[in-house]
Length: 386
Image 1 (cartoon, one colour):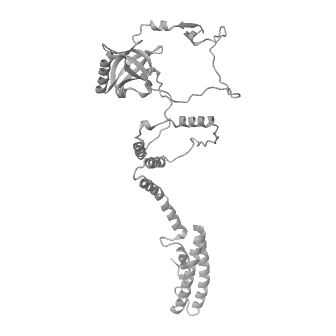
Image 2: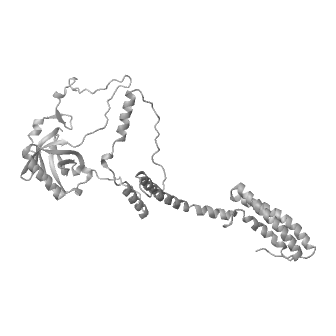
Image 3: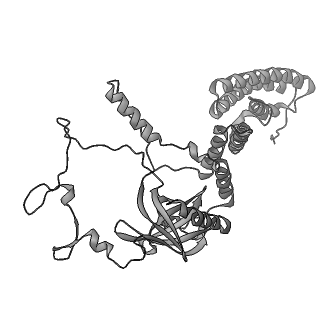
């Protein structure tokens, strides 16, 4: 790998010659600007505003623009003469626990390679000291025209350096947190912990850029003439009211199922059963009130409606009562059958009540005849049904 900076690590009185190498590389796909009408490249030309001539890169320097618009030229020689100890040295200032470094400060990452055979011993000494102390080194260094802050740590058998932002470059998170007071229940936290435990383990090496792969496939398809445009389906974001507990439970079950963990189906069934258990009893009670019967089945309400009127002839003599009872028994059976058929067709509470009323009217008409026959032999006494 090509080095981008050569210098030394200053470790007290120990100096370690090193080369700075980029530890990361970008795999993102870059696009060129083109003229849409004809596909021609759109290029930027650097032109001097004084003479209007294009300026080659070799003749381009740097300068500082003052408030009045005047430019103060600054050359590389000017910067090299600055009395800056870190111009060619990574100066270690202290060693601190790694958790004291705020990840917000993390910037570019570099590998530090020993520069020459004489650097191998002090390089290894610093590396092993960092390993044993389980600490990181905080250092200053100068790169690309300015002094920077860095953190040295061990990666495998190499010393790596992360550029750090200066503390005053980190913005305070003012006005970012939700303003409303929100209470999170322990049950919700437990489900969140379960989801974190399920999703927590991942092979970092297996992660890849799906979007980049899709763009690469798009480029291949268009360059080969086999591209067929399709309408992308975009799910609407936001504005949805969700049950947080249900969403967490569903997420845990889905995560377990995707990982092929045993018991995912049982967990899913149990959760669904619990969800139904909160609703089903309400439906059953509503059905019972509607006349479907208290544990006796459909049509149980019809005999009750009929029974309310048949008690009016209950005090007739035994001979008349016996005849009336036979007729009432037949009427009740037909009432049950009619109510059952009516309930089956309607499938609801209203149909059951209608069947019961119709059956009651029919039974009442027949009972009237039976009561009239009974009156010839005996006079019934009035009785109110309970």
